[in-house]
Length: 177
Ligand SMILES: [Zn+2]
Image (tube, rainbow, N blue to C red):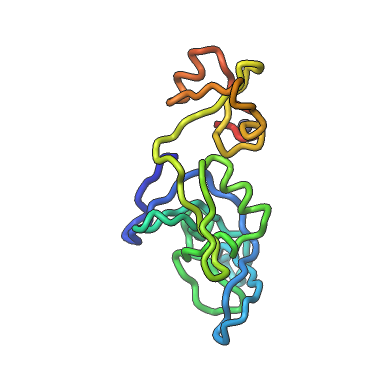
């Protein structure tokens, strides 16, 4: 997976953003609660309306992978009833809905790290690569469920997308590598 620095946060972001509507976060008493999270958009007449936030994979300096929550196109976000708008939030993967988490992790070859109720991920291999079966004409991200079904005797690995394309394979429809 390709990572790029996210501003001055010290985080690296990767993959495509998914829509995030709620986050499971700890409140001040240490109780997990589900909060609505939205992109802040201000309209004429001082009415605020909201659209879902963006979640992208993000890696901290210890190479632990969680999710970076921002507004759409990296604008501000609003969490719950808070009157404060913030530029971003780095959360562990368990803060996301299962659906959002699954979608985010598709392009990544990862293992989950579970520590004290917190779930983060780590890349098994830093270099991106692609997987295909010699029985089909499609190639996938290693994290794609189609890729996981390929038996090891049929599995072909490509180091780059170009390599897979020039070997006559087409990008899988599900993971769109
Ligand atoms: Zn796929």
